[in-house]
Image (tube, rainbow, N blue to C red; front, side):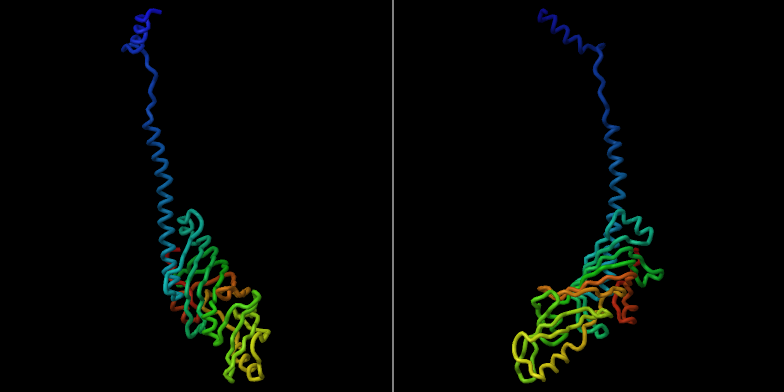
Length: 269
């Protein structure tokens, strides 16, 4: 082909009468995708906002009822939360609180940390209490707090069910004993089976030991309905594991009346 013939053919392809390939308009597709994303993101954002709000209100209520120095960590599980709020029941709520104080009514032993896992949490009709269908919990009782409550210095023993105590005697000497920890009914922790591991224990020492450990430690500054199942000696303190059905969190005023502390103001559930 002659070079001019090729040029003419090329220019002819772009003449006004020539047919060009159709160009697709992508704008409607972009708009459709954007609208779809908006429909998806708006409910998610609203659900996240509702989740944050109910977690914050629950933390404030728990702090008020349990009288903790700081608000606990609260996590509402499951999506969407809005439908759970509409039904009046939260499927699962996890709460971790620190430094739950003791009072004259509950005894001298505070709880250093309480971790709760609540299932099917709902509020009462008058908003003064919340009820979980079931719950499990772990409570940490630190050795310094145990020592302050019992008198002698308490530390970890050589077994998971054992602690050590250094007991001062009326003679001015002191002895070290190992004792097992066990669970009694009524959410109580008992100390039994004393073994002297250091020093000499005269008869007056046995009397002193009986005075120190004759009364079990009772856990009362925990939500009503939880039952103590086991207790284990760890490096930082005793770990008490609890569980129960129909666990109740009561308002601050109701807690004082019943000598039980709980969470209040669950108006958002």
